[in-house]
Structures are given as C-alpha cells and as structure tokens.
Image (cartoon, rainbow, N blue to C red; front, side, top):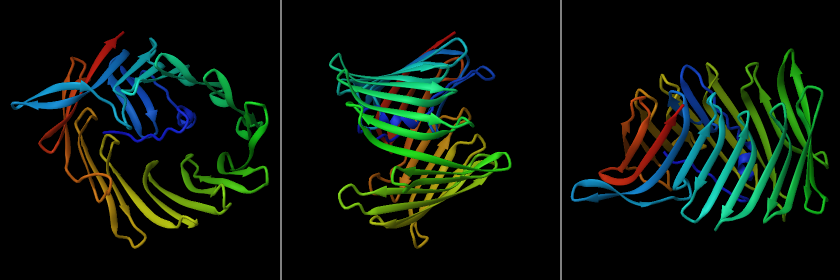
Length: 340
C-alpha cells in the first residue's frame, strides 16, 4: 500500500522520524516511519526495490516502464550491517531526484538530496544518547537553517532554537515536563512569548493519551487549536478523537482494528454526528504481507478493491509483487535481497 509524504524542504519531514533496524530471531526489521515497518526473514545485507508499470498484454501481465509517483519512488535500496542495523537508504524518483539517508547505530545522521548529479540539499544531525541536539540544513551548499536543542538533567529537550543562515534567531521554544511517580505524565511547549504551542499527556506505559496543538495563521494571527484524545488496548492504539476550534473547525473520531499479527486491518472514521465518513479495510497473509485493501467514502480514492499477489524466495521474503485494481493490473514491484 502506498504511503503519503508531503515534502516542503526535501528532508525536514524526516527530522521527526526514527529509523532503526535490528536482528531478532533471524529477522531483520526496518522502521520506515511510525506504523510502517518492513520485516525480512533471515539476516539481510541489502534490499533493492524497483517499481514498474503493469501492462496486460494478451492476458499476460508484463512489466512496463519504471514508475514513481508522489507517494513512492521508482527505486529504493536498503543496506544493513552484519548485525542487521540499518546503515543507509536510497530513493530514486522518476523526476531525477535522488534521496540518500545515512545512519549511525540505527540513528539518522545525514540526509542528502541530488538532482541531475548535483547536491541540492544536505541535512546533518548531531545526537546525544539518540536525541537530536543539532540540525543543520544546507541548500546548494549554503547554510539555510540551523536548529539547536538544550537538554535538561533528565536528558529531555528543554529548549529548541532555530537560526537563519546569518545566525539570527528565527524562533525559540521551551518545554516543561511534569512527572507522576516515575513516569512522564505531561509535557508542554511554549514560544518565546510564553504562548502555548503544544501539550501532550501520557499514561504510565508512555502512551500518548491527550494532545493539544496550536497553529497560528501567519497573516491574520488567528489561532486554530486541535485537541486529540487516544484510546489503547494492551498498549495498542484502538481509537482517537480529534476536535478543532478557531478558524478551522472540525470534529471526528477514528477506530482502529488489528489482526493477530498486530497489522492494521480496519480504520473507521466518523464525523461529528457519529456517521461513517471514511473506512479503510486491509488483509494480510500469514507472513504479514498486505494482500488486499480498499477505501470506502474517501473522496480522493475509488472504492475498488486492490489485491496484491507475491512470489517468494527460499526465506519466505517476497521478491516480486503484482498489484491489481479490480481486474486491471496497476504495478509490478521486484526486489533483490542479498543475505549475509
């Protein structure tokens, strides 16, 4: 299934994404982003993935040209060390854009963007005990912005400062943390005018149970506040409710259902009147591979079921997939997997 990423500056979205892999019971895992984990059986050294247009030729489904879209690159590669820890990823898009990520001990430390062979963006991360304390963004080899974080005695980020290329302060945010017994119960973030920017509350297991996000419109200075509550079962998110006040008013609730493997098989969203507004339904095989999905009530998606068939190697990792939209072939994906 495709994932949706909105890129304003090429790499800024990845600043909040933790990417890590480890070997466990001869399995290799790569967390692309929250809720999107690739799992491989065996000790994997590298994975090369290429997406092709699927063509129905006289009843035979064959590969067409290499494709990519706003959701997926045309080619993607993952490289792991001998312990199964991710060390490098690469994405090639049909537009000619190449994105490369470098990791150290499973933590993202460098992002590079190339176009027509030229380095157009470089983002560098400095960490202290896995926490990002510095982030520098270069555009066309010129420093574009610099962020610096200060840690408190508990190792939590207590202050973030953002500077422009001239070293002038763009914005500053401060944090306050509240503890109950031995766990973090709440954190609050404020700007340099002491206005609340965000607030999060947690249960004793570290699950986020409430959040507040305040967005200020640049020109009118009007504020939009988003309130969310989260519900869990066995530390698994099963529901969330969102309400907005201010210049963007809305309210909706979403329920999540998982299978025995922990895979998300249903998402049901209700509007402010409690009526279904959008539903996502998925099915997986015994290895955890997505084999079908469809959207109901989504204005940007049709309601035709998509199915995915796989070919596997001797380790039960898929090496080829064919995605169908109803009876129409959509995409063929091939993977080359190298083992240690």
